[in-house]
Length: 85
Image (tube, rainbow, N blue to C red; front, top):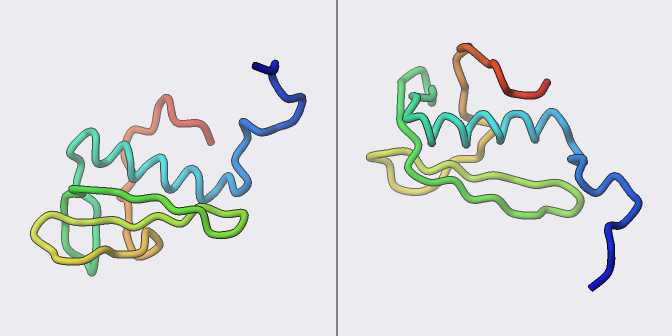
């Protein structure tokens, strides 16, 4: 086994997308509704896929068949303590 690699491998390639994905995950864990097409929904599943150098995320909402690209989901402002900027 080798030691740690001296790079920034623990830093996301796209910090803004990372933050949005982190907030989606927190919304699912905390059962906090998200907004899709101006209506509140709850997340039942998230999938993440590597797309070149970036991560794409698909969101599955309760009561809806099929997944939605994470960019179509709105997260309403809330208390964000503990979430890195």
